[in-house]
Length: 246
Image 1 (cartoon, rainbow, N blue to C red):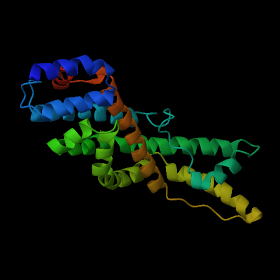
Image 2 (cartoon, rainbow, N blue to C red; image 1 turned 180 degrees about the horizontal axis):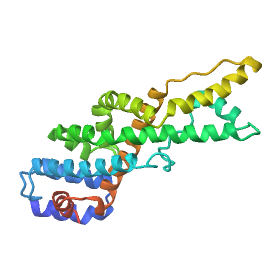
Image 3 (cartoon, rainbow, N blue to C red; image 1 turned 90 degrees about the vertical axis):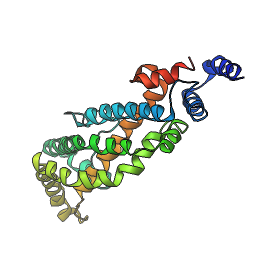
Image 4 (cartoon, rainbow, N blue to C red; image 1 turned 60 degrees about the vertical axis):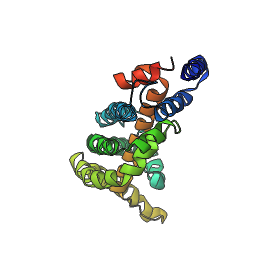
């Protein structure tokens, strides 16, 4: 009977989506003691943790490199949208100085995000290490971003706590505040004439929130690769598990 079921599973594998394959793997492991896949539940989860760890390191590594944010349109920090009128006003400066200040500022906030992102991987990895068997199989059987959602739930508060002082140091290191003061001073000088309100924004919170959001976008991309691309299954355990459905 087991052989018949296994044959049906193998014959049907080519019709599975990536998510279906993950679900089938999880169901097979849950319903066996290792005789079908040659792996125990613990080994399957261990393989998943290892794969996610590699994905996390890849994603965080990309973000923390120079231009990791600035030259990646997916996660690049834009000029703070709540004060976009500042950018629009300065870019109309006929001397070109306003536009130059905006460009320097946008580079600065992305550099701050890149510096802070160096601290992300250990926080993500701690969350992965704390993953239970139940968590692991929920991820395997979940949506294409189930692991990302798990990490978002487990790490966001810690990331904010860790990132905030680092972002502040980065703001100081890359002189973002000085750049911001130049931008706002130039803009606020015009409000005296126009009668508009002066601007002020919490740069630390803005950069921290955007940096974390960008990291999760990269993590989600890495998760999708693991689910859909056999090449991204980076350890022997996952390769062995998936081979039962090849």
